[in-house]
Image 1 (cartoon, rainbow, N blue to C red):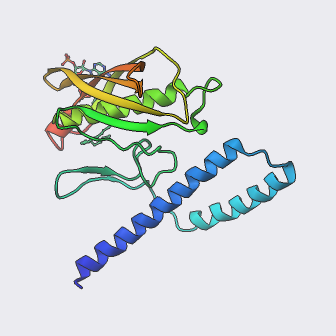
Image 2: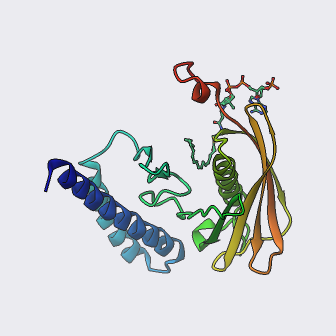
Length: 211
Ligand SMILES: CCCCC/C=C\C/C=C\C/C=C\C/C=C\CCCC(=O)SCCNC(=O)CCNC(=O)[C@H](O)C(C)(C)COP(=O)(O)OP(=O)(O)OC[C@H]1O[C@@H](n2cnc3c(N)ncnc32)[C@H](O)[C@@H]1OP(=O)(O)O
């Protein structure tokens, strides 16, 4: 085994272990949101969690895992707030790019995403749509940063039931790309619609220009 292969295997093992930790942390958050334990039990669990937190903090990175491009051009961001498999905050969203264009994701929100009773928080659905729009413009070869994001909430988004998010580019002009996205129920009824303007930063076209 060459040193490169051994290093790649070590990195794979590290990432798998981090993914498992993030999955467990999501389970923990869900359990916290839904627990009905008594105060003494809550205090005991809190003390155990404090000890675990200290263990992890003892070996701390300066930043979350960075984004990277694989040899086949695929984009991976394990620390991302929406898609990051190693980020407990992330659903994580798994985005597909259908051959017909655009981006698509099937997802199921959890009770931890609740805003109004029984309904997913509007800021959470906006975040998902922002990401899906960003992936949509990137899939069209026009990656960019969100300039504007407009959301129309048409129906309550439930948690605990699958919903489908889809996005498509609608217009391009210079460094600007507009796209629409929607979260719909499995019958296709639109629940939240979004339009975004994405701008490819000057710096991405001309590396070294700053920004
Ligand atoms: C996160 C991805 C990183 C890596 C990406 C690479 C590849 C990606 C591959 C796959 C990615 C998959 C998924 C990505 C998913 C999600 C994306 C998440 C998106 C976000 O979560 S992102 C965070 C929120 N976002 C910001 O943090 C932006 C802060 N901001 C800036 O970084 C700059 O401000 C910028 C870049 C916007 C412009 O800077 P700039 O210097 O390049 O351009 P400049 O100012 O010259 O404007 C040129 C023309 O755009 C007009 N214009 C400018 N800003 C506007 C605005 N806000 N609204 C309307 N029009 C605007 C001007 O009026 C002018 O228009 P005109 O030419 O007509 O006069």
